[in-house]
Image (tube, rainbow, N blue to C red; front, side):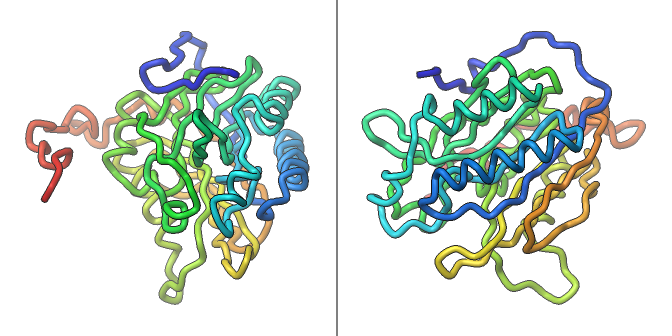
Length: 296
């Protein structure tokens, strides 16, 4: 089995940085328990993204398995090790198409534990895996074990990419870790449930991703799922955001779609927002100690 890569094992290979890359977020509708069908659905989406010139492809959370499980037994029945058929196929696609692929799957880990995992693969194989640290709702009862490693940030042929999964993206402290590790693009496989919102308002999840991008001056690419699964409707809010926090793709809510954008990662290497302000250099961590302190 390919070893997991955590932040302290990040590859820093000194690759030549591209001036522009094309990112695609594949908004598909996995079906719970239909692993073979889901794998085929992902394959078709990756091929379509490559036809559109994508260098980096982002897939949804739990793209191999679907999401709404009946119980821990059903979850375990669809979980795979990192050297299983899903990751192996993604590695083959990345090598054949010269892509970076970031996607989510149900991982069967050590001692039979199951994790909600994101992986990053490129033409050389599995570069990093990350186990979701902040579990959402039913994930706490279906048998997922949360991760405890920081989000990885990896130098790839198409830029310096960070990765985390869904609810992780809503914790500013966690997102900041990836930003401080030099992520130019943060990729997030997600499954966003559809919730009511005021008429005319953007989904709150998208607004929070805009904040992630803006306060860190880095690009963010989120691949959401769509469809209805066991009574749960999904938002379908895939979006790519620039380093100022503005969307560079149109929302395709509730439909299967591939959203793409060509971005200049050099913009994320510049953290200045005025002549005298820099979003990283202006930080005063000594004042923020309570943020990382347990509260009774």
